[in-house]
Length: 117
Image (cartoon, rainbow, N blue to C red):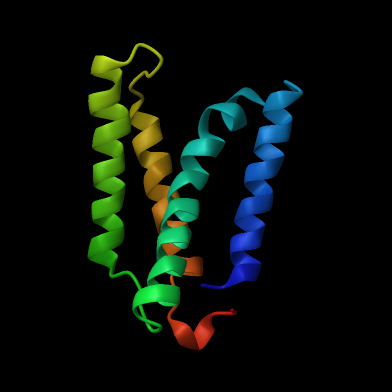
């Protein structure tokens, strides 16, 4: 995992939280930033664990990334809204999760040759 690129994602997340806290974020940003950043953060952490403790050269396959996207979408946009009133289903969220998965695959999903430990 490239910590510089992950650091950029983490800083975006912190900016998102600060803007939400001070209630100054644009509505579209407030609605979709968490969804966009969730998979890159989750998969980066999972990648780090795999590379650190299991397989130094580990890299997620595209099939694994797409599976994570589909499972997350089903959970957050299909199952949770049925059982939890604080969740609402939004088709655009699924697209934004997919964009986050694409960004992870393109910029963060690197084997040992491109990582910084």
